Image (cartoon, rainbow, N blue to C red):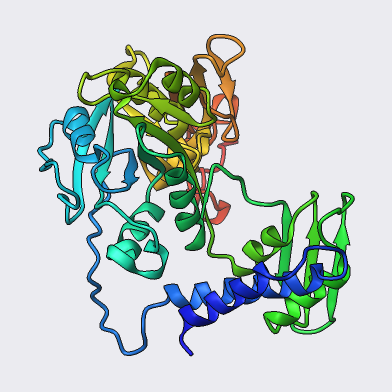
Length: 399
């Protein structure tokens, strides 16, 4: 029996199992089995060559955004309008067969936008090059899920389910669970918050399903069985997602209002070029890019070429700013002067742990090299040898 058949068999067993207190341990074990099988499904087959048949492109710019959606929802048209890069668009499905990159110049930054082929239901199992599409999405900083406003709402649930099946967690944060494997000592189970979805017995059964008999588990919040499985697997990708509803010019105003009020959603029209500026602003907000301008000592700030930082790519502190300029700069920093919204007064003397905000101005003050021989009254003005035996003896006084 193949992996897909085993997954479908376990899903059928979960569907016909009643959910109550008596069956929650059995359901927890079945969820762990499915997670293990899906992880095996994503692994490359044994004996495969190193070069895959994917269409990964080189990272460029300060951020990467991936366009994901069903065929013929307007992804290629949106890429052409935002970046100017030509991507073939036609009235038939699967017009785009490979990954087409484009660059968005917005707020003195460069954002890479990727137009991916349309995915279909069953993409997590490899249908329609779905694995290659999702692999590119995993390397992105933001996912734009392009949907057709005239189609049913079920498309959104289908795409979300396909992405979560391969380890992508949309608009979620990592669970506050500490997990560490050990060589001996058994399983240590602790929690700092009351647990309502999982208990010690269920945690032991899930760990034994993974053949883990020595580990330390600490729950810092009320988590579910799926959260514990995600932490044990360790290959989950937590990424932000914006649901973009295209073709709002073919539906009524009431439907547009309902779609716009849904969480993490935005409505646009590529045909009439409606709300595209708001889409760029929303992308900027979700990616959390921070522009930092440099100021040489005794000169005006350089507002032409900012240093772009982000929380997902290193961090936004002064230390990250120095590492972004050069790795060897950090050991020479004495202190930093900061102008901007992150400073309490202008300028503010800051250390390496200070958090920077958008459009801050930073001046780095380096340590001065120590002068040999001391300074001030401790400075030596003589060129005489240090050892007394090497000094020239004076002639004796005449009496």
